[in-house]
Length: 288
Image (tube, rainbow, N blue to C red; front, top):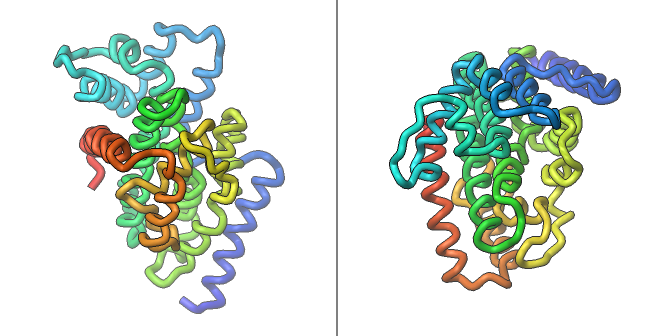
């Protein structure tokens, strides 16, 4: 393939996405259809447990993951297993279901063979999002008054722009070569795409802001809003974003500056607890 052909493909891809952004009608991949239906249903103020259970039960993968999460050590420390979706939803709550639906969409992307050489990076990106979600949830519970489920969901979707781009790029297979500029494209475009995707899902503005640039960090410890919490979690997790150009040394330096109000012992406790939740989630979703 020539450089010219590759450039034309990249331009065509960006033109398609840009046009959808301008028209306010992003075309979501099939893997996200279930997620969109669940999120739309959860926004219905009249939605009840019975109707939501029926919707989740109709989607085998989401139903299986819902029951599995409810039976995980994190939600079932007493070892009392549930075997159906209604009981599982009572245990995990609708707040965690939002994140779970998004996670199922990402999990399907991981196993897409057409993405070829980018599958290892997608797995690392998925592991990073799980890590940030788990860490943000623990930070919210142990160090702030912020809602832990909201923090978890924000952690899961803060890089949704990258997942969206990767889920659509298969339409241009010439961009899926080892020497393609896809990594640069994902890194540059993920923030505006992520904001557009979340806005299209009618997510709260605070959540949309969580995918913005790091410069918006308020610099207050403990974090008093979800975007700041996600910023800190991004820095202190063990699993970096594979599309991020930041070196670990810089990331760790920023983390020390961002957590000046938290003593090292307390931070170590938070990280140790988040590792347990992260590993439980990784095991649940078989992230390699």
